Every structure is written in structure tokens, then in C-alpha cells.
Image (tube, rainbow, N blue to C red):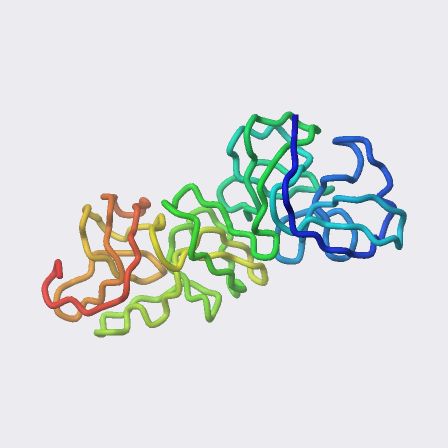
Length: 261
């Protein structure tokens, strides 16, 4: 049986009739936008909370912005699964690249049923990535080139220009255009996401060996930093062949005095 605890309430004006209270079918416990209509996604301009009260169009209704709340599953959700928002205010399990807004608690939930979750990220949904060891230090940016290809995930990006990072052999310049590792790319004009700290799944240029100091190469690929003029911005914590992905621990860029400084 789903339960609900404390949550942060916020009152908005409904822009449509939200009077259907049938559990799992009606509007209660579904994601809503600040405009007072059911949300269709969890992006920053999408879901802002979960409907807690009902009303006719124009009535004031209450959203839960964060906390322990009920929700309606749009597909089967397993215990402990991270949650994102899909069409008509339903919640589903997040996949790689999905913006996470909360987590399912306790038992699994069948499609169309009311579940029990904890929500804390409607205002700043965190993109879920199966290639990272943690889900912190993400940054959204506007893509100015097409970053939607699957092979673009794991490349270094310049978040200021919205394009791929470009490497440089000059000391101190290899990371001048680097802002993070792409985890969720979009076409030009869309909102993409990069991992800026911690660990990330990066794409290799050349053979990478566990423990290698890593720098940014042409096209946003990552390669072994050379001694002397090489600038390392992280360390490989897995090995990989050229073109494959590997786990990269991001760090503060610094010039190497030896190959493995």
C-alpha cells in the first residue's frame, strides 16, 4: 500500500479541469507544470511538482515540490528505481540520459498504479547516466552543434560554445576549451548535459591503460597526456582500446613534468 509523508507544498492556478480523482487514472499524484497542466517531461521547463489536490480549471490546486509523495507509474517500476517524467504526468524508470526527479521506495509498482517515492529534483533534474560512478556535478548547456549521436557520449565538450572540445599541444591549453564529458547530447539548439567532476565514461583516442594521465585530443576524444608540455585533467581508472569508452576520474588540469606525474 502506498503511503505519503512530509512534502513541500506550493499553490498554483489550474489551467485545465483536474477533478478526476480515480487512483492511477485521474490527475492526482501526477506530475504538473507551473502552468497548471500535466507535464510531459522532466526537463527544467517541464514538471515542477506532483498534484496533491483536485479542482476545476482556474481553481487553486496544491503541488508537492519535494519530499515523500505518492506518484502514478506509467510503466512497471522496480523497488529503488530512479524516476523521470513521461507524457501526461506519469512517472517511469529513468534510463541513461533521463532527467531524474526522484526515486521509487519500497516495493515495485505496476503500470497505472500509485507508487511511493521520494522526490527532490523537480527544479534541477539530474540526468541519469549508466556510465558514471556518481550522479553529481552535472551541468546543462545549449548545444550549438549536433551532439545527438550515440558516439558523441563520452566526448569532451566546450560548454561555453556548445560544441566539442578541441585539444592543443601547447602547455596549459589542452583544457582551455574543455568544460566536461558529454553524458546526454541533443541536436543543435537543444539542452545537453555534461559531467564536470567526479567520474565519467570517456571516449578514447588511442590505447588507454589503467592509471594513465589523460588529456583532451582533437574532436573531444581523450588520450594519454605526454610528459613535459602535456596537460593532464584526469586519470584513467580503466583500460580501453581506441574508440572505446573508459572510466575517467576528472581532476584539476596540470602540466606533467614526467609522463606519469
